[in-house]
Amino acid sequence: MVILHTAIAIAGIVALIIKAKLDPVIALIIGALYLGLATGVGFTETVGAITLGFGDIMAEVGLLIGFGVLIGSLLYEMGAFQKMVTLLVNGVGGRRLPYALTAAMSTVFPSIYVDVQVVLASPVVRSAGPQIGQRGLPLMAGALGTGIFAGYVFVIPGLAAVSIAGLMSIPLGTWILYGIILGPLTAILTTLIFRLMLRGRYWKPSADEAADETTDSLNTEEPSAARATMPPLIVCLLPILVPLVMIAGGAFAELFGATHDAIAFIGDANIALFVGLLGAYLLARRALGAEGSNQAMSKGFRTTGEILLITGIGGSLGAVIAETGLDAILAGLFTADAGAPVIISILLAWSIAALLHLAIGSVSVAAIAAAGIIAPVLGSIDVSPIVIGLAVASGAMFALQVNSNFFWMFKSLIGLSTQGTLKTLTMVTSIASVVSLPLVMVLGFIV
Image 1 (tube, rainbow, N blue to C red):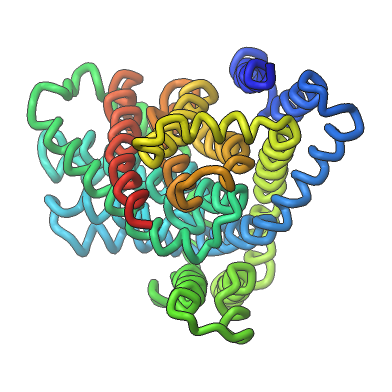
Image 2 (cartoon, one colour):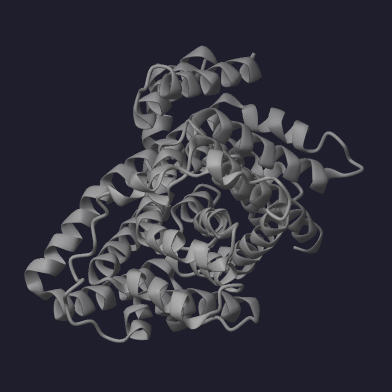
């Protein structure tokens, strides 16, 4: 009955989000309340689990998410990301541009929102596409889509990556070591496969591309620093690069047994991202002035609240699931086949995240919900938590399609028809999810 009620709760959450158009926060709370009461956890215990689950996940990732969003907001307002995209266009040839774009999106850009990324990069895609060749527009669109979401789920400080790591208690330093390789590798391989697909009759411009007027009429807001004096690009990106080096340095030090309080302090993810935030704020004060930097911070604060709430509620759902005793049941499923426990565990984690994404249409909500469901059973699975976490990240990308707001933003900004968006964004996120799955499986036998 626990499995049945859990399935009803998850299906109910999905239905409330899609059919009833409820906000995911409300739907997740309703699902958690139903699950706790239906499985006999009890009134007081259910409320307690929801409260403690929220608090526990906030203690894990609350500051990280807040600092990361504020860094992205400040750098965006300074125009740092726009300058980097322009540099990519001018610095590489047409044939290499899709790979350069997808690599940049999956490594440096995850510090900002996916919708901001597509707003920033869509002019590059539209202008550079025709210069690459007859299939340049879909190729650039595919490179953009796969780079955005490979970075979002695999690379710190991508929101989905941070959320999964927090929910599953995976050290960010450990995640960085694997994600920084898996993210761009997935993006580049996907772009290569998609390029091969475009050589045939897959793409039909008359049906797959929208009229030029669609994109000409778009009102794309530029950063407020478009006319401001900016420091060199490498300086602008230091608030991202320095924290990553600090966290990775702490992870490597721990790996090689170099333990010291000072090293642990410097390598702590909260301290590292605060250093990044401080650096971004000082740069913004110089480039934008006090008023401009404070406006950028205000925008970041507004965005942070929504993210923190839904992430915390994801932790609440996981805590209620833990109280139901489902962990023992799922642990049995994860170890059902003693001949191949690693493969089965990875496939189950991937499938849960993929099904949630197909149903809900949000990569972040699918990743958070799947991580919350699986986190209680991690101790019973004979597979490293980082591998299961990466499997969830891989599955959460699968087949982004029409029930996603991003899908329609992507369609309009790039200048594609609905069919063309399915052929680019939906296709590349499906390929990226499937391509990354065997890479995660390989890690499962190594880690």
